[in-house]
Image (cartoon, rainbow, N blue to C red):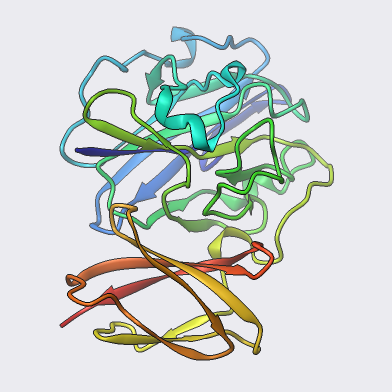
Amino acid sequence: MNAITTLILVLAPLGLLQAQAFAFELWLEDAAGQKDTITIGYDAGASYGIDPQFGEADIKALPFPDSMEARAASYLYGLDIFCFELSQADPTSFHSKVLILDDECMSTPEDEPGVFLIANAHFPVTVRWDQGLFENACRNRSFLTDWVPGGWFDVGCTNNDIIMLDEQSEVQLVPAAGSYMPNATDTAFLYFVAFRGDSTIVGTPRPGGRTEISLFPNPASGEVFILPPTGEPLEYLLFDAMGRRISAGGIQGRQAVPLPAGLPEGLYYFRFFGRDGSPQGGLPLRVER
């Protein structure tokens, strides 16, 4: 089964054309070293559909290759599909390698959020962009998240924090909590990006999966010590490289956590949360026998 990951983002430059036109590249690399690039941006002259003049071309009917491929996509926000309902529908109408939104500086981001589809990726996926492009009054509150539009900042079905694009230049993403089946063989995960200007949003103190928590040893075999900076209680989720949930639990302070018996060698990923559900970042873990 192809693992497609939908992903919403703003990243890396093709060029700043004018106040109402902006486009850049987003660079992606998965845990297996597979790479791809996508282009996203906005223009006051764009439409919500396919605009050939901006390099958009609908490739939704083309099968995904066995190697990782990233695609931009439309998102049918009007369907009001939330995490627990995504398995019932495909919230995209087209795929493209380029996505130029009908938007401009400091407009409302919820109307046409950017989406990415990532097929056959091994998680976590490292996403990189040109941070300097977002140190700009028109874009300095742009962010990446898997929090569903229509419920920004209060939807509990998420695995990734709010990543402010002017505060860092890369992030490691794990699969979003919400997933859907665009056809009989492909599973997809949703991530969103919003272009925003100088404004205030509710964020988290550890953006983009960066965390003060550490793991020891890494690589590990039978157990791993989770070392938070204080004695605060934490909840954790453990995912494999395809985004499947392996185990979950809680710790109080620095504590050894046994790994599931018979866990195969490979790359895994921890996500951490406070007891109140607040995201506390994530870390990769390699299992070796």
